[in-house]
Amino acid sequence: MALTLERPLTDVLDPSLLAGNGPLVVQIHRALRNLILETVLLPWQTLSEKDVAACLEVSKTPVREAIIRLSEEGLIAVIPKSRTYVAPINLDRFLEGCFVRLQLESGAAKRAAAERSLEDVCNLKACLARQEEAIAAEDYTAFRHLDEEFHSLIIEAAKLPGVIQLLETAKVEIDRIRSLKQRLNIRATDRVLAQHRSITAAIADKDPAKAEEAMRAHLGSIETKVWELGENPEFWALFEAINRERPRFRLSA
Picture (tube, rainbow, N blue to C red):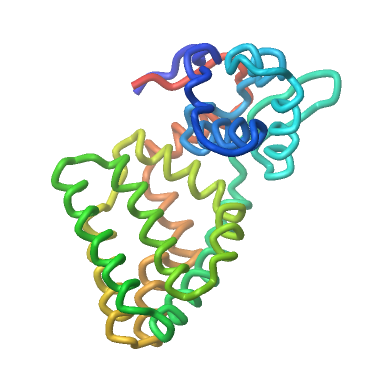
């Protein structure tokens, strides 16, 4: 994977990204956010209101509002009257996100085991089946989306829908680092699927303690996350290359 000149916005932004529902500012926010979390838009890439608006064929006002929301999430840095750019990946926020996720999702798994319905269990098992299909097809992008769906289903089974929004905010750096790993084909899908099966079995058996334990084993401790990051020199080389201020580069496959 080579490090080359960054992709111009015209290569990654176009009106088709706004084909969803909801107010225009929400659609713009969602589109830019997804591109940042998927590391299509890399740290330090300039995002001027004028250029983004031109690419999306919208006025600058909703773009400005979307950028403000992204800056509040720490994904975009705004230097007044100077420059707006994608914020570098913050490792402290990554570790904080791992901690928050561990606490919220282990608690949600415990509650899901106590509160789940038969429909919840069926939904989890159906999601597992689709994960198996994605692995067999080597469709790791689909698997990543199904992984997100699996965890959301557990939170829904726990009757805690508001936790989903809390996690979306807490795990932005987790998502960006996971996207970088995917670029390097660093994955453990078979292990993840096995862990998902264990969590599902505990929830189906209505065993809160085992469900919480299985989720904690799945997500891992902060110490485990630090060790996982440190064990792959190729990842660190990539991370340091893209996170260093270098306004004119991108990744190419």
